[in-house]
Amino acid sequence: MVKHLIIWKLKESYTEEESKKAVAEIKAGLESLAGKIPGMIDITVHDCPLPTSNREAMLEANFVDFESLRGYVTHPEHVAVAKGIVKPHVEIRSCFDYEL
Image 1: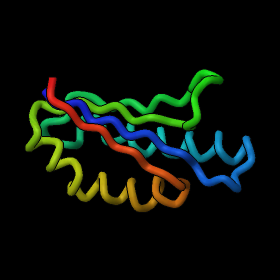
Image 2 (image 1 turned 135 degrees about the horizontal axis):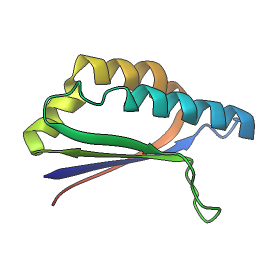
Image 3 (image 1 turned 120 degrees about the vertical axis):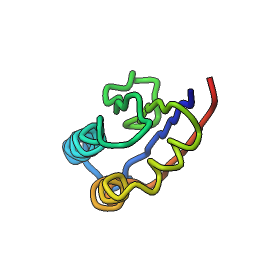
């Protein structure tokens, strides 16, 4: 199994309200991919960081294998969400993938 973690820092110019709205859009868009990507086991956007956090949201997704993760990255529905919903709100994106 492969775990895919993405952590986002939203645009500095966002107010707290704009950040909350952006995270809600990101969460809805990415979590709507559940069941649509071959080899994806689950997908969750964590949106309630503790005060010690310095990022607003984190994606956690699990895949049956590395090839499934590679398929997700280029899957048209994922690309549409990433480019149309996520990317416009994000200043910094960090990724960490690993095998369990």
